[in-house]
Amino acid sequence: MSPKRKIRKSKIVYDVKAHKIAPDLAKLRSKASSAAYGPGKNGHRGEFEEKYSLQGTIAECIAHDIYKDTDMSLAPLFDLEPVVAPDAVLGETKVDFKGRDHQEVKHYHNQKLFVNCDSHDNEKKKVDAYVFFEYDESSCDENGVCTGYKYVVPSEYFDKKNSTIHNGPFQPAYCITLSVDNVEEVDGTKKDQ
Image 1 (cartoon, one colour):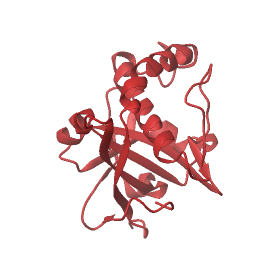
Image 2 (cartoon, helix red, strand yellow):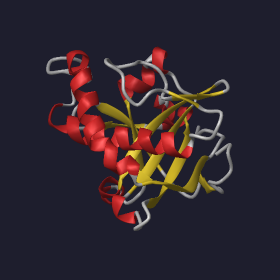
Image 3 (tube, helix red, strand yellow):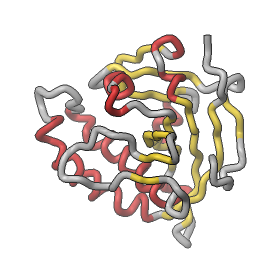
């Protein structure tokens, strides 16, 4: 049985600063979390640390830009150690941000979304929705304005009964397939999207 609510896809416009500050910020975040997620620890990403840290950091930078004038309470972009909590809260709705760079989108033919199984199943980090930001720095114009897409995915899509397990490079991930049956395009300028 699949979830009743659809995945909402919308176009986004954001500042190029997300791409400019994210590389250094991602390195700082990786260094700060190395004691908790370093070699031999659960959650260690090995050679993929830089890639996935950068994707997540870009996503959070985009979120801080596009949600800055809303009632959404956003977690800080940096802390001295990992925080096991949602990335944002809007009212009672808890949200986690995920990044999708253009290479990943092309590789999966824009059809797959992934969430780490351990993270999704962690009661301390339970969220109501995931927001995937699809970005490509080459979309940025000379004025520093970038375009991309966001997918607001109700978290139940990643529950075991609604997803498949993908044995990723460092840990298993729940995987869902985007289709015309589960995605609706919406106006991304509305504040509740």
